[in-house]
Length: 156
Image 1 (spheres, rainbow, N blue to C red):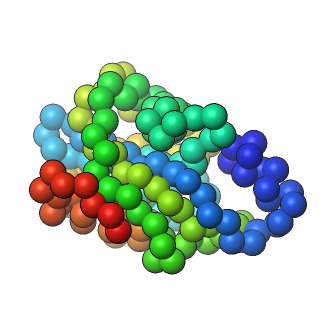
Image 2: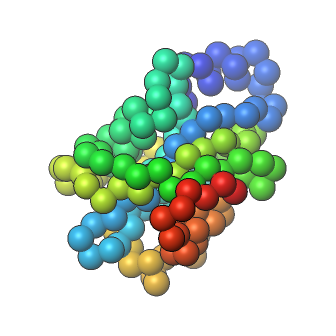
């Protein structure tokens, strides 16, 4: 949790907040997508996180991917913007967020993926036809949008 969100949470507790964020759809040369097994809940997820004060969406994507997977993003293509009440999410600690997130497709990256041990206990590439059943629902929707993506930016 970044300092800005920590400060908000100290003032408002677990109440619902609107949170700008990013999601990474990272693919290897075989077309498999990288997911991380979360440590705070029994789900797999896309590498994702909040945009910090003073940071652009692309900078947030690069930072979050590096923190969660040890990968360095070389290029990223914005695919979609996710907003609205269907994005609402409650963390296991009770904190509620309604993300306003940009999903990026990342096909060029460096380094070897590894879990950070904090947010994620494992990172692994999955074929799109063999995704785990316990995938964060809002991220499952993002992956489905990718499968139907025709190059036009999606607003969902």
